[in-house]
Length: 157
Ligand code: FES
Image (cartoon, rainbow, N blue to C red; front, top):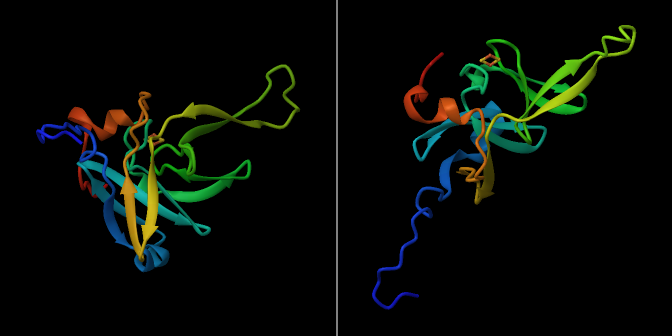
């Protein structure tokens, strides 16, 4: 503890958990949107688990809160309503199918482009849902639509 009271804790406020709603409500609706420290996120409740991610798709800013959840290669993904990109709920990886051009008869395989959509942490306390923004230092493609000039808060499309 700094006896002068000048101790600096610069990022604690920015990344503190924010209450975004009630557990009972998201269990009924299975998704909700929220603005957490000026960043728009979507929270999904899927098969007993919570997932939060940037609301705008990393590809071109599509509205992920309006997408369908489907399993691909055994992994639950949000399918962006604009161009059908598939993003894993738990890790934010972009999935795609590849085929071997030298063996066109082989089955297409699911592959990962790596983490494209920033995932945030969801916690539940006394029936309240909290979101803590990711502060992982890597540059994530979805940051482009979550920050700066391209950020759109509370857009309805
Ligand atoms: Fe999401 Fe293109 S904006 S797939």
